[in-house]
Amino acid sequence: MNHRAAQTFVALLLLAFPLSAQSTKPDRQVAVTIDDLPSGMADRQPAADITAMTAKLLGTLRDQKVPVVGFVNEKKLYKPGEVDERIKALQMWLDYGFELGNHTFSHMSLNQAGLKPWEDDVIQGESVLNLLLAPRKMKLRYFRHPYLDVGRDLQTRREAEAFLTQRGYRIAPITLDGWDWMFAGVYEDAKNRNDTDLQQKLVKEYLAHHDAVFAYEEQLSVKVVGYEPRQILLLHASRIEADHIGELLDLLRKRGYRFITLADALDDEAYSLPNTFVGEEGNGWIEQWAITQGKIPQGAPQFPQWVIDRSNQLHLPNGQVSTY
Ligand SMILES: [Zn+2]
Image (cartoon, rainbow, N blue to C red; front, side, top):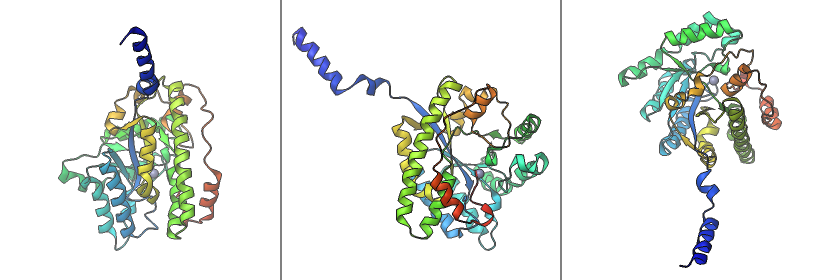
C-alpha cells in the first residue's frame, strides 16, 4: 500500500469507527436500591400479588446480574392471615442473592415524628430482618431514611446519624430519583382495570422522565462534585418495576452505566463530602451537597402533571401510596 492509499485507508477506518464512539463513551456506574418492601402498596394488595410481583422483579434483576439492596418496612408484613406469605416474599430477596436493609418499621418520617419515636421505629424495624439474616450469617448494615427526611435541624440530623452508626448501620444515600412511586400507584390502578392504553402511556412517560432526571443529575454532579460520582438509584417495589425495570436498565446502559453494589458505590469519596443539609422536605444527596455549598440547584425536569392529576383522582386510602 502506498502512502496515499494508506491515508485513504485510515480515513475510511475513522469513518467506519468514529473515535468519539470508541473513546468518549462515558464509563458510568450506578447501584440500584429498591424501597418499601415487601411492596409499596402492601396494604391494598393480596399476598399472592406481592409474591408474584416479587418473583417477576427479582427474576429480571437476577438474570441481568444487577446487584440490589432492598429496604424493608416490616409493618407491611402484618396483615392477618397473610403474615407467613408476606415474610416468604421478603425471604425471596435473600434466596435470589440480594441484600436487605432497614427503612424503619412503619415508614416513619424523622421530620414528622421527632428523634425518639423515630429511633424506636428503627429498632422495631429490625426484628424479622434479624431472624431472616441470622441463619445466612448476614448482618443488617444499611439504613434508608423514609421520604429521605434526614432532620429538620442539624442537631437532630447528627444525633440520628450517631444513633444509626452506633447500631451498626451505614446510611444509604440516593442520587438518582425519578419518583417511580408516583407512576406506580397510577399503573397499579390501570392494571387492575385492564386499561392497557393508560399502562403504555405511563410506561413511556416513566422511561422518558427517568432519562431526563439521569441527564439532569449527571450535569449537576459535575457542577457540584466536579465529576460524576458512582450514582445510587432509588426505586420502589411495585408492579410497574416488576413489569418494566428491564427497559429502565436498558436505558441506563444506553447512557453508559454499569451496575455495581451499594458497597462499591459508597466507596466513592463523594459520599464523604461535607453535608449540612436540613429541611422540611427530603432531598437527594447531589442536591444536599449543592445546598451545603450555597448553590441552589435549578432546572430539574418537571414531573409530568397529568400523572400527578391521575394519582390525585385515585382517592387512595390514607394517601398510603405516596411514599418515598
Ligand atoms: Zn420509602
